[in-house]
Length: 351
Image 1: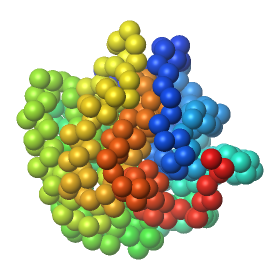
Image 2: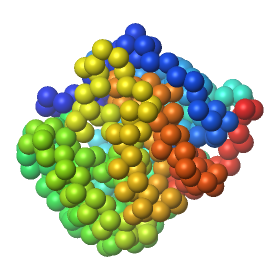
Image 3: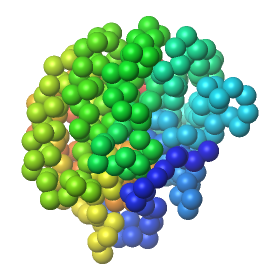
């Protein structure tokens, strides 16, 4: 099953020949990396399978493990509707087991963040139990998108969630159930919803909440030309959200069309210097608000692959940490991801 995409801001398909025009030496190649956010999927003209993931994570940086995040991949085609999403966990668990057979390579999909409808009530437990049965060691959390912006009633990329889903009593009960299970909640939302997430985080303080993609700062439609105002609003709400100690944030995803990225329209792909310069205000704001212990860099591949290569992306992240201490770099590049997603100890492959 493909992603339920809509609107005019669909993910562009990566152009391998265009990406190949930008080649950089790998910065600090011995630094271990855990990529806490990528997908496996089949989109029209854009199939990103485990072999594609292997090629990207093997492009020069020392990636030791990755975390898969739900993408409507491999759903069951029969059986109870609420349980069909478990097919994705089953499929990714199989891919991860196959990848694990190569002791020299990274542990691909070592963590799995799947989908479950958090409004199901008591039935949610059955779904979570099924996910855990499918991937006993790897199933780590749930992403149920709450993304909705009133300017886009038909959605931007994914179909919009119901209004104010984060405040819905049934959804809050589902969040509490995740906390009871010791699972995390990945929050896919837009920047205009950060205050709602802050209220939900305070209401369910025992739940580990992970904000995806800086909070997904919209840069299309009525937000075009309003970058300064949008940044100030986002920064204010990020600081509010960070007051809840159960919230952490992924730094990445800025290569999405909906964030205003247009690098793919250029003759040449961007350099890591350009990316680092463009993203520095957002990275510094998040680290200042959350502290280095609650931030982690993410690739968001293959979505962001339309804009830059994996090697250039992680070079940009390393440039953004050039003034950090070794322990701070470790937090941002791998240690926080391992801790927040409760990954099993991961021996580093030989450098």
